[in-house]
Length: 296
Image (cartoon, rainbow, N blue to C red; front, side):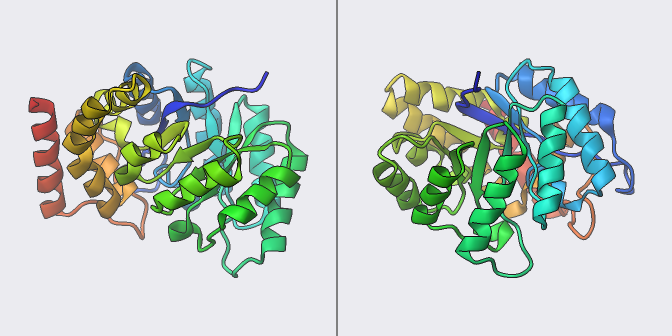
């Protein structure tokens, strides 16, 4: 039975030791528990927030297996299996399936610019290797590849287990176009924090975000208000959290979320180099934003 993903999909971090060399799996477990206790509808390990691109293959497998075991099917899971090569993505997708993932997410990352035929074949190869649903992920800011809506829908038509789309370009018109050209049959998910409200109003099935690591109640309340048709309440909730959502985006997901977790009682180390953690000014800004939200 295929899992239906909806609502708030929380992204995990990958904790490291202070020097950034060793994984801190117990801290990862605590962060997963916090997300589930906070009420997220699903969890997505090893995405951009989880620094999957900065892990060795062995580390990636450790984090994937540990995350899936810790989640323990308390909520659905969707593992990011993106890799520079098709063979690498296939290996990761198979590993995720073997260890109990409910779905996988694929971002077509590449050093060389990919043609449409190469992108389609990439998804076709991964789809043929597993039985799980695949979330196609479009995020040109991190992958260097921007898939137009027409290409996305071609992949959905040609690869049967590509069944949903995460759109992170920050262009709300992409989401509207997915709805229209896809005739409302392709579930799409917002991956751009500042577009959360607009995306839900446009018909997004969910919001893929790292924000629940810090403000789960606000994120969930926004979703619930939209679902209930309480748009004025939803608007108020959205604009209340928007300064933090913008800061998370501009400050960098691993840096801001890791700093915020430390401020709320869960030390998880800094991002892996070459990525820096937040500087003193950034930490002060983040602390002030969190204090303001928690006081409210």
